[in-house]
Image (cartoon, rainbow, N blue to C red):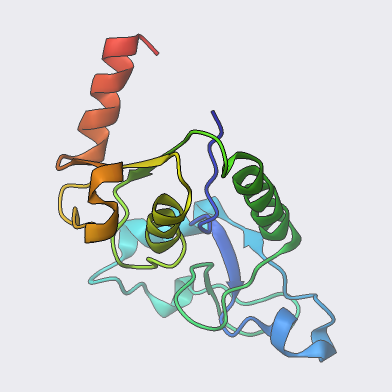
Length: 170
């Protein structure tokens, strides 16, 4: 079994416009900055997904505003750690694409479907012995072409995982 999560971590902050990748003057200096305490403080004080401007951190290199590292636009910063995970993920898929492969998708919607949802559907359609388990309380739809290779569970992911933990005494 292998678990991978290529999505960004919510405790990582990046320069708002990804200056490290877009502006060579900073020569990679505007990297990701971990700051879980800042993110927790922002979360406590957010009102309608807005936080006080005094909490918006400033990049120590370029002095630009920072924000949570999310793949929401062209400015998402992919650091070396992200690229290492991506290479390991691709290597794993290539190693097992011709064997029995079980893809488990937990609560993936349409925020960034190109990261998990669509690739999992494509692999399920393309790889002969691949089965997709999709657990989702809202977005359960699946392409008609892979219906017979998909197990759909309409339920809350936390409840399903708790049940599995209990049943298998994990």
